Amino acid sequence: MQDFLTALADPVRRAALAIVWDGSEHCVCELMAKLDATQSRMSRHMKTLKLAGIVVDRRDAQWVRYRRNPNLPPERIAIVDAVLDAERASDREIA
Image 1 (cartoon, rainbow, N blue to C red):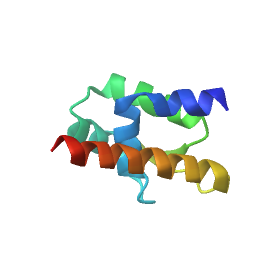
Image 2 (image 1 turned 30 degrees about the vertical axis):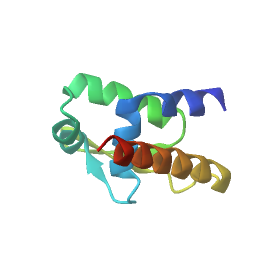
Image 3 (image 1 turned 90 degrees about the vertical axis):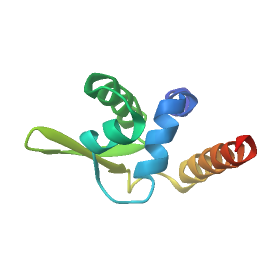
Image 4 (image 1 turned 90 degrees about the horizontal axis):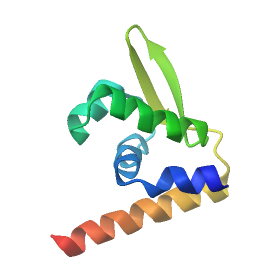
């Protein structure tokens, strides 16, 4: 559980999760562009999310595509949903 919570602690990883949480696949190149991150930085963050079991990946030629883990237990989905909801609420308060 500690790896899971640690993976959610970083703001870049939460932003990436907000993108991939829609259920479709997203290329590292897309995440890089949306989050203004280098390829190595984005890949490192996504590896952390993958090792925590939150996302799964698929190699597509030179790119890796990520999506939410379809086998993530419901209680962990609820945690990610709550974290992302809190992040969105915080962003609305700032704006």
